[in-house]
Amino acid sequence: MSLPIEQYIVPKGSTVLIIGVNGYIGSNIADQFLKFGYRVRGTTRSPEKNAWISTLFNKKYGPGNFELVTVPDMCEQGAFFRAVKSVSAVVHTATIFTLSPNPHNVIPGTILGTINALEAASQEPSVKRFVLTSSSLAALMPKPNNPVKVTTDTWNDEAVKLAYRDPPYEPERALPVYAASKTLSEKEAWKFMDEKKPGFILNTVLPNINFGASLDLANQEYYVDVQDDALLHVAAVIHPGIQSERIFAFAEPVNGDGVLAILRKLYPNRSFPENFQAAEDISDIVPRKRAEALLRGMGRDGWTSLEESIKKNTEDLM
Image (cartoon, rainbow, N blue to C red):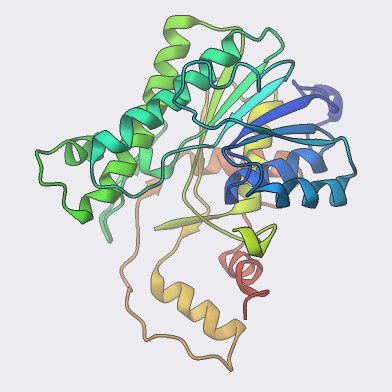
């Protein structure tokens, strides 16, 4: 059963700030909020390069519902003070995704961007909810056929240790560095809430690899459909029952051979590589049941299947 409109914490018609709106996940989050009847203000470093998103949303939802603003550097002090004015919620999706193996080039900036967004939101009385897009990698880097139980108290401290090993910074360190940046930035967000006690509620969403439709193809372990991921961000803003939660957006385990099998089924006349990855992620992600229940509460029938998600991700490309 869908959540009744009168129970929304943030009323329809309110403005939601989405930091990093031009990204794959950020643009889908914006699309879901606009679909639900909210106004969206989105930040980007380059409005000229990302004018496509304004064109897309103005055409889809009419002028006046979407606004694109410039934040050149999320690490600058006061970076978000203007962007956050009069908004009712903030969704912070931006991150440093350079795949640099040097932790000092990634982790401090990711943390600072998160804290700057939280600081700005704490100075704006209208903000009721703040949602941080974390990552499944903030909880674990799953190892194939290795049973591990994951709860809302699980953190990827292993990645932090791997990231901050002594140099040289070999290329294969890029993934642990990124994982550490998501782990530490989420931890710092919860620490900020504990110490500063701002007037809004923080929720975090930890998505795994996203499949699904891209809103604009010209600009663009476990899996999750990107629209399911986006809808969980909406739920984290408007649902009265989600307070100070880590929401684990893990639909089902996925491996390379499984993806190839679906591609061969969907496109029997196309050629694909030989199977290469049969090992499975057998982690027990306990909080995924809560996330699926939230999806159902938002009107979905549950997780979008891997086949449907891959179909949406590829049908315009094949």
